[in-house]
Length: 217
Image 1 (tube, one colour):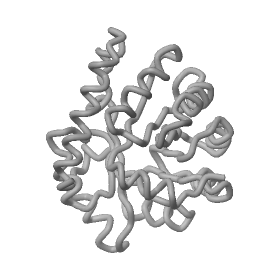
Image 2 (tube, helix red, strand yellow):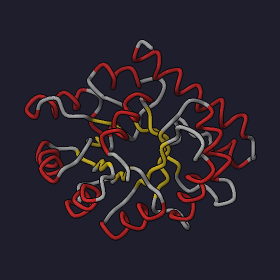
Image 3 (tube, helix red, strand yellow):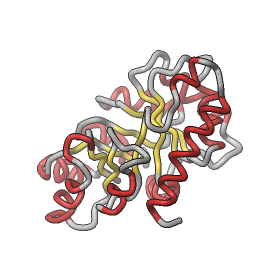
Image 4 (cartoon, helix red, strand yellow):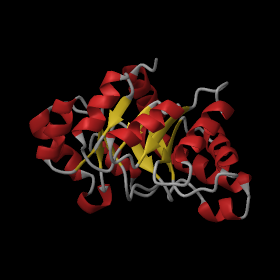
């Protein structure tokens, strides 16, 4: 059984979650491998894609001999969370806070990262048992909002997602983020369409370099 605390620690150590959205089923495995080879350990496959559970299972099998962590994103409800967990998801990320989804993850020792923006949403998520908080969309409120959330709530783990790029990632870490989530700023969809895994790898590596520089690694 997955240990949610261990998954949290590995995400924080890596510093970034790659959000893989809308990638064709026949390309998801090579894309995931290329991004992992670039230094990204946490791979989030969104549940709103076609055959998402099959994609998670395929990537999980492909990267079973590595230290990759495969999870599900854009999970809106508990039944979807269950199907993603059954497919092998080690963490579940949502754009909002759904208490039933968080509680389901808790029962199965799967890391839950519900989306929050306000202190009320953050408290609701934490009381439900959230392991980390996904600040989303981060571009709407900016890095300073991390401090606004953590100020009254203490040393909570916040992962901003949505609008995080190599140009501003240092601002989010300086503000207290424990990791960041990134989609198109990390995942080169043009390269995927061209079936150019070298470019996919290079784009992800550039983002990882920016994260390392922001954290002083």
